[in-house]
Length: 197
Image (tube, rainbow, N blue to C red; front, side):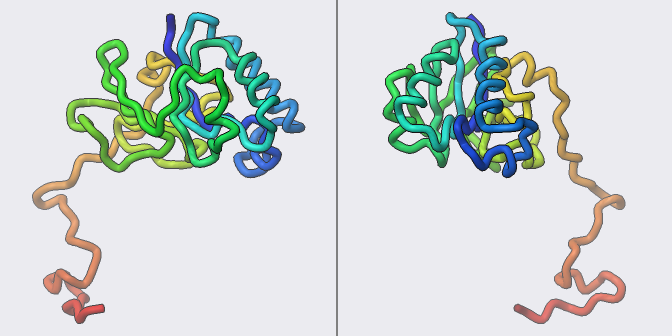
């Protein structure tokens, strides 16, 4: 069994192509491509953690049929667009707004939203999220697993760990440290003392 992560499929969402610059000619083409790419990597015995915004627009019967066609045992970590039509589907193995798990010795915090800080962040745990559609500059140990950032398919932890991520530069110290960029430091040349709001 392989564990996969994904988010923000927005199946059936007519506005997704324009909003997120998705390269598909129609909603039907977008949905078909994501379904095919999902099933190309996920097998029936695999597990998928979907971090929210599964579908937006189709009725419950259409969503149920779509969820049934997607391979794997599927967990939903709810997003802002997952209403009762999505959360009420019988095809979810579990349903929650937040989850923590350890996979291959790596601690994971799963949520639809990116966090500024999270549990065990200092111990190397990763924050996997969606919601930002690949547009949010990541923090170290934080990864957007949304389809817009991963070629419209679920990804494994090995793929996540292999992808280079932007690292925050260490803070400058000593003579290389810049003074604060505001008027609270009157010693900086050309600056007046801060006079309030």
